[in-house]
Image 1 (cartoon, rainbow, N blue to C red):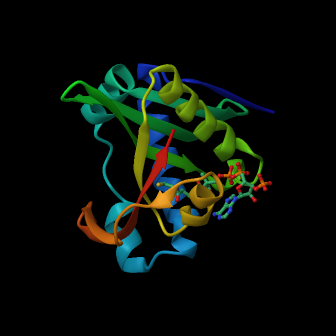
Image 2: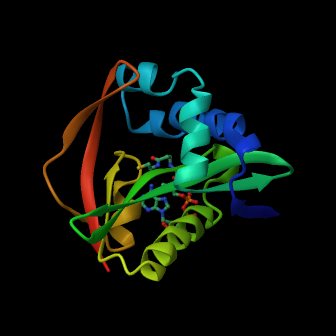
Length: 162
Ligand SMILES: CC(C)(COP(=O)(O)OP(=O)(O)OC[C@H]1O[C@@H](n2cnc3c(N)ncnc32)[C@H](O)[C@@H]1OP(=O)(O)O)[C@@H](O)C(=O)NCCC(=O)NCCS
């Protein structure tokens, strides 16, 4: 049994732990050790996590009272037009393959639709690229290498037109 709900401030540490675990134990199947070493071992930044919970939309999934993943989307206005950018969708191995990723992505898309956003963007891991493609996202630019936690990490810019 799993519960998906909006994140609260006291979830910050659990979100961080699930995020790092997902990179170390799931993304490591598709990304190199060099990519994982910095990206998957970042220190807990409480201010950043709390700010995301307060100012963006963050959901968590709980299984047996433990946070096993999260989803995070940012809404931003530019010249009167509202854009949405997915900043995270990470599950630990305990939450993988149960339809939870699809459910959490749908929650983010539903929120974007409610706000009448026309386009949702993200930078996909190698791991999730086909998952997003199945959902209708398309590549919007060539692969980039993002500097995350001291590692260069391959990311695929993608977009979904609503
Ligand atoms: C990508 C991720 C969120 C998918 O979550 P999940 O809960 O395992 O996926 P679901 O069980 O909801 O699967 C939904 C559908 O996508 C398919 N799918 C799941 N993961 C997939 C993948 N990596 N590639 C292709 N298809 C995938 C499933 O087979 C399922 O298909 P169906 O609807 O036809 O049955 C999860 O694998 C994950 O956390 N990965 C590591 C973190 C990561 O890379 N996140 C992306 C950050 S940008």
